Image (cartoon, rainbow, N blue to C red; front, side):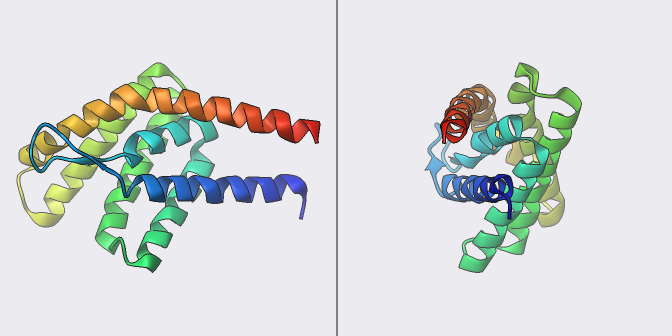
Length: 163
């Protein structure tokens, strides 16, 4: 196996772990019951920095790990995959732009909440209202997370090229 393939597989595995672990952190909100996961802005940043293929593969691995560990259900995975697909589609359309980082999290969260309302038979507006603080947080921080990931990626590339 080539060094490039080993590096790529390792990178995807680390991204999957990053998504899975960040999904366990819930950030409080000023609206009771509307805490949100740290994984949304990190997922958007990963898509923007590493591209659609690595992002979706890492997301699938993170969800598979959650299923195997019993921390997620099929229902959780379906909602998460819808979020990931919407982010990937927006990346395909908008590219690596500020608009992508601002819009993809809120749009993907809205799509996931709409699907959730269809599954559980509840009104979509309360679900969207509860997600609003998380959407704002994601819109404001995904670009910041992307710049940190970009710097980290560039640093590892320089180290790799030296060796």
